[in-house]
Image (cartoon, rainbow, N blue to C red):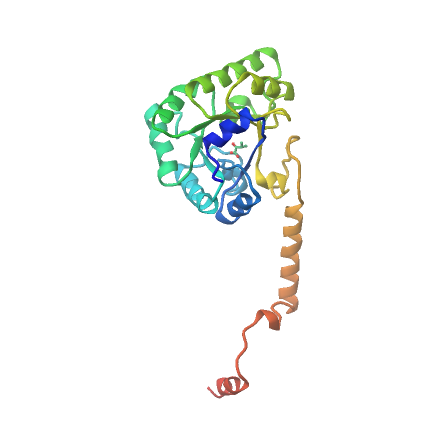
Length: 277
Ligand code: KIV
C-alpha cells in the first residue's frame, strides 16, 4: 500500500509507530521499500555521508534533485520526502515555493522537508498552498550548525524547551503534515508528541515520538568516526564491506579471482585459430 501524508495522519490517530530512514540511491531505496519502511528521507545529510563534506551547508538543489530522482525510482510504496538544502528557502517565500516545486516535479518526491521554527512559517504556508506536503524539522537543525556552535543537544533548559514547543505549535498551525524533532531530551520529545496533533518523528528525541528516523549509514556503521549517542547499530555493514574489499584485493593480486565459474569459454577449435592469427 502506497504511504502518503494520510498514512502519517492515521498512524498518529491509531498509535502506530511511523518508520523513516534516509536513502540517497536507487538500490538502497528499493531494499528499504521492500522491507516495508513508511518513508524514505532524501536528507541533505547526503552532503556528509555521500559527498564527504564536513557539514550539510554545501549541498545544492541539483544534488538534491539528482538523488531524489534515484530514490523515487526505487520507492514503490514508501513516501519519498526530499530535504530543501541550505539557502534554497531561507532567502524568500518565492524561492521556497519554486525550489519545493522542483523537488516534486524533477525529483518526483511526495513531500519536502525544511528546517526551522516560526521564522520559516511563511515559507511553509506558501508551499502548502501550492499543494506540496511539508515536513518540518526542529530541535537540532544541522543547517544552523554555526548558530548553534556545534552538534549539541537542544532544549535542555526551560527557556530553550519553551522555544522548541512554540516552534512545533507554529509549524502545526502553518500546515506541516509532520515534524522531525532532532536531538532533544526524551521528556521534551514526549511532551511535544502529546501536545501536537501532527506526527512527531524523532531522531535522538526518545521513544515516545510517533515515529523514528535514522541516517542509514549510522545504523549500519558505514560512516566513520562520529557516532551520536542516539544511534543504534543494527548491523556492522561497514566492517563487512571493508572485509569484502580486502578479500577482493588479495584474491585479484594472488590470481585467485576470477575463477573458471566467473569466466566465459570458447571452443578448443576457436582457441587454436586465435593463436594462428
Ligand atoms: O538530512 C537528514 O538526514 C536529516 C535527518 C537527520 C532527519 O535531516
